[in-house]
Length: 563
Image 1 (cartoon, helix red, strand yellow):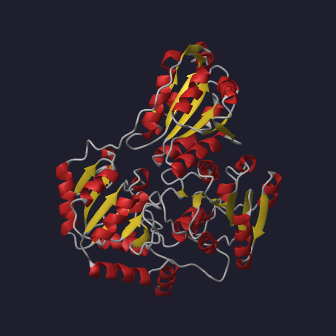
Image 2: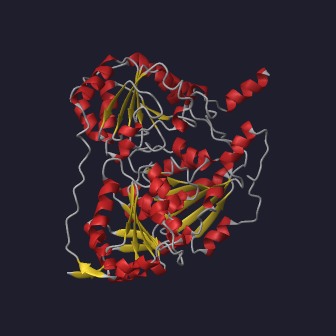
Image 3: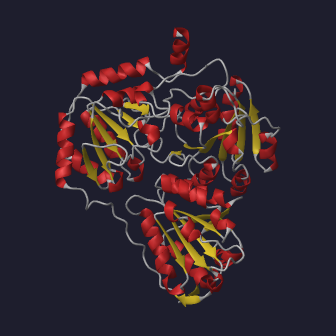
């Protein structure tokens, strides 16, 4: 049948099973929005307050559901406003398809109104980017975009379509979407045998679970392997929920703000099994001392990650879930009582600690975990709020912790929470923010209210850029250069002005009643929690130091007393 380019785009979205898109209209993309009007009973469009909010919402939708997130924007500034969200998705391997529309083909390259080469701009931060100037290839390009976004190591793809293509007509024939199968052709039998031999020989095995455990759907296999070989498990920020935080073998996050148990355990193990992780610098610290006593076995779908940051002793390249299935067929059960006892001793000696005499982020997050029993999707911003959410909430299932890990995007969490709630309306969705992050994209509260679904925003409000201030305290001799937010912004009034309910919390006694009210409120509610500006995240590893050198407040006090 003959359809316009805009109608072909929407039909292709339907082909791919897309039920929700996030975006903001403009002149160049008007034809697509006109088509969406005709299909409004089949595809829900969420109008965000800013295009960056749309890109983060598509990202959050993808992380929460495992499906491809879709965002739309017009040409010029509309398209460039997506860039930060696209880069966020790229760094964390999130499948997103961004569809933008450009000026008409005759106007390209002439500095036309709202013209920008978005295809060229996003090349370094996408798996692939396209510009479509010919309607005959439009449908196949959209289909290719979804296939690329989902296959292998997922990631964002951008399709830019000129306005004349969206208005032209062409024959459209519906097709079933290509079935994406796990990448298994690179899994070699000899690599599996080597992995099994290394696991059998290890007396002090340790598992490090990264984001690939979630992307590949390998949580069950990771759990089975850990219990089969009696190995403690730590995770990265992206790996949270891939192995239950309530499991006795779990030791906490690894890295700069990881637990001492995880950091010391990785440093003392004789085999580190790295599952779907890329050895980020915030995880490894000084790479020359990382897991210095261990052989390293890395399993990852992306061959480019092998020996990129840390040299490994063996690897398996391919889909993690499939690789683990093959390993589990060959690995016998083995117990390591002395090693587990040593790890349990570290847990008792170095538990996470915070000040219980005042209102703090950790107290609020622990109380939130207690009241929800861990049954919630938590999104975060970036900084202290993010680390406290990673440390003090126990994630039992995959796709329940959504956070910008690789890019560290302030302003990510609220848009991601909206996307997660649209994708998983059955789940309680809570965004944990600092006030510095919240003000980045707080206009999306209006979007959340418009969506008319329950959403909770918790602001850990210390009137400073907390994590940056912490570094200034520790490493810049208390020179607080432009990190104090000493203005008169009232977040309760701001939230109420955008249609949300809002409460202010200033004491520990107010926390539980406020959280209970928020959890029972059917719409958008903002909790402005006033905490001290000098609270810090511990443990901490200085940049470039060994993860063994993690320190906390007690260590700092001992150092001061010894001087």
